[in-house]
Length: 220
Image (cartoon, rainbow, N blue to C red; front, top):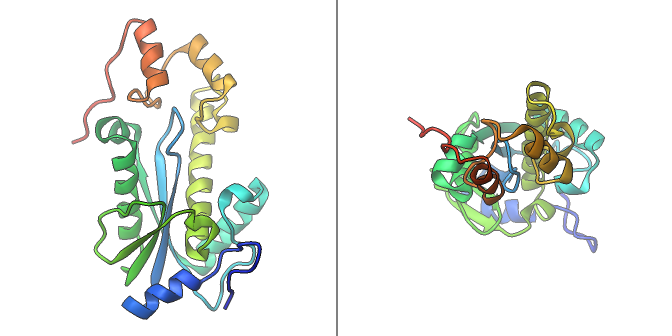
């Protein structure tokens, strides 16, 4: 099994520690999309087969898009994967933190079998039906969380690219909904779409200039 080397490469050290306390399997859980102005937040839960770990797993932010796409497919082939998606209505209603934690819980529930324990990227754990441990910068420390970070990012990036086809002018295929100059220019020209997070201050500011607007409708 891999161990952390001097470069801080992700390993199975944290998974093994949880397995010693709670048994196997252990899931890694991460999210993508907390900061953008538009689009959902996507969480993923991954249970790796420790005998068949895809080569090159790392924090998704440290990988090229081509490598992420390749690893995304390999993870689905070799591991158990669950995905949870919190849409803009939930983000606006509950706030981004609570929506993220909810999506993480949904990702865990979407796994084919409930893990004995879970490693969560960050400093907060969602409500799960199994023990959970938060791990700050876990996507750079845990192979399971690194795998989850790749699934979450690729899934969300593809969603934003698809939304860019139906809502051109905001460059979502490039900025993925983040607050870039081209996104801000699109908002100035075209206004706010149903996919914008109206609870976020930059979007609120645009709505106030344009005469206001209703928040996303409440969830059932």
